[in-house]
Length: 242
Image: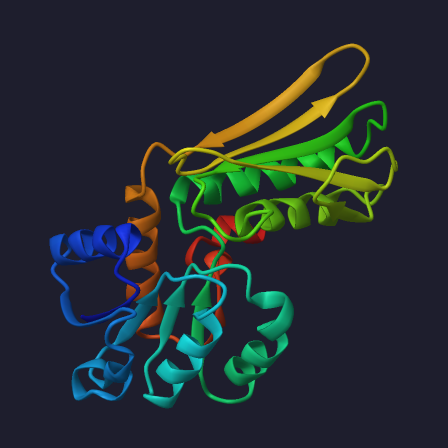
């Protein structure tokens, strides 16, 4: 298939390598130096564009790609609070297509399923309180991470005694605290911790490099090429629906 890349940093370069390895063609690469290429024939020829940029430009990138008639796969986070409903409407009733995930890693998809299942069990045991920490490289602009928010929403869905997540320490029994740490070049570590007076139960996903995220993004592009609407990891991996 023909793939366009929007964003050509470390993640974009890793996606390029994996896409080529899987037999795909990179028809266009758009970065900060050439935004005019959204209007190019090369970009318009793409079966899907894979977008990894940052919260300040992701939304406008989606609109430009949609205007060019190109489906988008994106892992950019931090834009959804302000523009999420508009993009969802464009995809559900406006004929546009976006596959979005806060994290494309197969390992994180499995971790997310385990997280939701564990939260359902732990909801029966109020003597255990839950907290989360996430650590990323110093270049990451948003906090908490999109993955942490997705994991927190999975906990809230299966643990009714928690009403909301907060990005700070808290003593409120109905709040789920998320600690955000930014240091070095850490790819991504997410830990969920259940603590009682007697013991601690914790689960952790620790990304060793970007290859798992890149492979997932290419798999999502392969899936999205033949689909329409607002898509996510539960479409690609049905085990996340249970």
